[in-house]
Length: 76
Image (cartoon, rainbow, N blue to C red; front, side, top):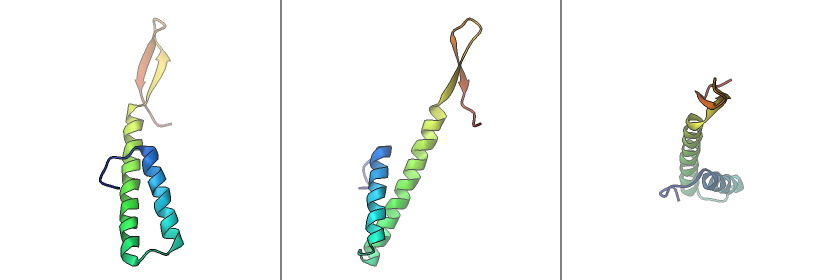
């Protein structure tokens, strides 16, 4: 499932499935390691998606003429 590009929500859903499978402890070691690797990749992909989204966020404020003015996003 890691081969195709998943949305953020799909990635979280798959990550939740992986956690449940690993928590059961029923999978053989080799399968558990594959699930762990997939989960790690999904976490990295989700973090990248969040970082990308944060870069797109901008603040708007009222400019001199009353029109909206874009400001870069700054962490508070």
